[in-house]
Image 1 (cartoon, helix red, strand yellow):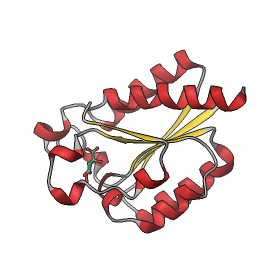
Image 2 (cartoon, rainbow, N blue to C red; image 1 turned 30 degrees about the vertical axis):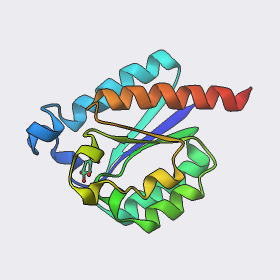
Image 3 (cartoon, helix red, strand yellow; image 1 turned 135 degrees about the vertical axis):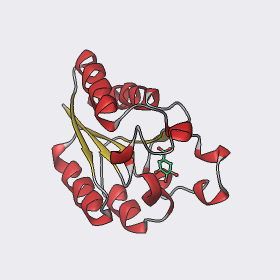
Image 4 (tube, helix red, strand yellow; image 1 turned 90 degrees about the vertical axis):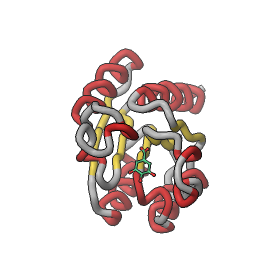
Length: 147
Ligand code: DQA
């Protein structure tokens, strides 16, 4: 089974972007972390990043048939995108939302998430380890669906 891990705008800048908030790891580091951890769970990972809202929507649509589960860090589109929410609502697979930072500790405009309305659950505040936790959660949800 393949899990899509979709990352939104500015996450390509990880490592140099506000390291005090997002840490020093790059997105390539997180991708490797996910690939290694997924292997142990018997999953493969299709890890992607885009700065474009429409591309994110297209990838979520693709996940409806091509993915067994979906992990999404929609970055700033989390707080703005009804289009992304609508796409996620059409996915009949486990969806887990991830944020590196604890969005509830930050500015009020980051407290609301459209993604959460379509997600099984959300993990935030654990940095890159959040992706590992999300993979564990998705693996468990995929397994429980099969039973
Ligand atoms: C983020 C939190 C968002 O509020 C922000 O716009 C991001 C990253 C996170 O991973 O902590 O770009 O999704």
